[in-house]
Length: 124
Image (cartoon, helix red, strand yellow):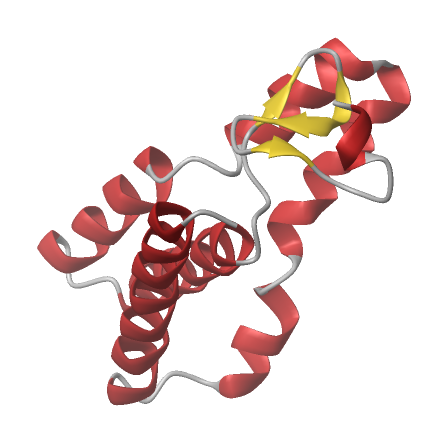
């Protein structure tokens, strides 16, 4: 792994930690966190309809735009549940990126913007 890749992964670890610390400081239920932390991965079900559709559904729930807008809405409208969901979603995305899982390409689940994942990653 190149040094720059380690730096980028560390940045995502920092984002994940920040989201989790903010969640903890807001005294939200850890049951809610446990229930929702993997919810964005339900978007992988889109792959049942093929790799192109799967990439679209997966990426729709794995980009930061939506949870950041949700976080802003929660802050502006004083919506604690909205804020909690946004922080969990941000933590999920950041953990994925820190582990090397990127946005999916339409060629297949293993092809991401960060490179190929899985056992056959040397083949890509």
